[in-house]
Length: 108
Image (cartoon, rainbow, N blue to C red; front, side, top):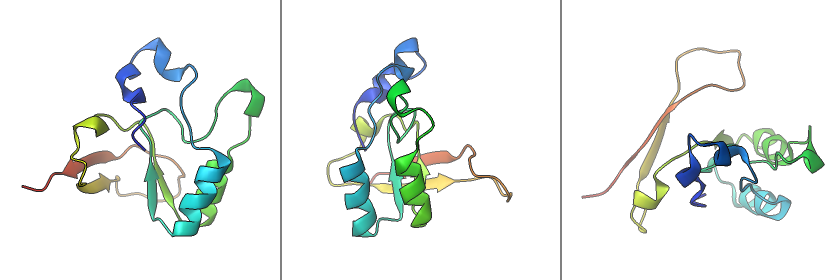
């Protein structure tokens, strides 16, 4: 999801009032059978105090086997026609969250 929020990356504003996916958006993507969802913000869920402790997007996506990538940057640099996205995780098991090397290959 390209929200433009990555313009705040590495600043205090990055964690304040960040965009997230609505329950309707989550349900729609899950129903479409997507395999991965990414966002250019700190979290795919609302992290405001009103929803503290709730993670409906994470819960729904992970229950459907849909992977989540957060903190994406420079999505505005990608062509409108798309690119090949790759997220390379380290080789280990037994954890729910970890850093990946995420990159996009732009068609020539």
